[in-house]
Length: 582
Image (cartoon, rainbow, N blue to C red; front, side):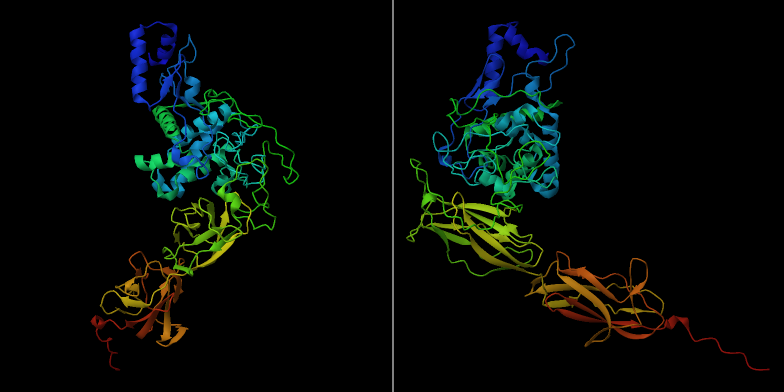
């Protein structure tokens, strides 16, 4: 019955009262500003961005226009009918096969990488629906690349946010202003750090649904957000496009897809019709869901793969968001273009950042700060500064990402989020750059030191004894501390030595066993647990009796020597005497 509900309303098979009640019930269940057309489709009337987001540069899309169509009235899983074909709205409920696969693979990847985020693939589907109509109804190649680029209008401040070019046109073909790109509509400055390679082809392409879906998943899961929490879910969606109407629209599709959906062939999806800007695009701009010719590029390598293959911003094939500073002069602002604070920035200065050092696994106590200044040294407020962790390190910001963008305050200072050291010791760089402006980068050196301990104590006081050829009943267990606090995950080595002050390995007496049950007298690669405890494997004795020494050392210089005793079994009694000679 539900399968034909929308059709019966259109045919007038029900009374006006029933139709009015149905529409009223749906409207009450949806967000404010929802309207329903005669086909059972809905759209949001209030599509203006929130006042605090007029800039848009700190959102994924730059607050670009989006599709305001809401789910149809009928069930997302219409019952099949042999006589009448698909019910109204079934195309809206269906998701093109390759697009759906990309969403589900992104969910699986985030479940492994960030399990606490609880990202549902239906949220990616909801965002993909309002951003591009599921990649223009699934018009993608087998590997997920859109058949032609999907570009939003240029963000030139004329009815949209003002975001000047940040990628020299590498992704959007526009060297004056940025445009949102691809099925998930990332602006180039966001894609530069959020981009991911979702189909393992070695390229991070915003026009590939696998890459874009994975990037969107990571973007929504930053800052430790748990998307099963309604507050975090709202924060994540609004960070994608800072509009209350956008949030309500995405929630409506999220709820709809959670009730059910189905796979449809690529290229057969329905493209939404209503867009949030609700006006005729200006010459030179391109609404989402349509393509625009791109000028030939001489810096793009030839590639047999369909679709655009953009080079990384900044040139080369390195990680997006970490280009090598270029000495290229700062471009001049075209005549008649409104000037922003970013246009006045001449350079970045260090703003009192002290030495950056932390123990592996710990948070850095010092935070990086940079000051944006004009040529005359005057502070520039409201400028976006991007901080990027560069180098062979697993250190990240507390959000779990290696990139963070911060707006300068009234004194021109941007303070980066706290860094959290990874497990890899060594030095790396945090690079500060001005988003939307080519000025020399500012580098900060940071160091991660290995986990260490300054004291080892044995747990337990039992004597460690054994008979020749036997097994020690008690296993050696020690606790490591640093400055009196637990020293967790500290590397340790255990060696059976010839003397307390002699590191040489003993060649007789007690021993451990390796994986092949062969005797070994040195164990490396040991590590204390979360409580600073280390329990050694069982010890065995050969036929040699006496007192032996086990020495345990840790990174940082903590050392402990433990005595081991091998004696004859006293319960065995004296050896039998020889019979007298006859």
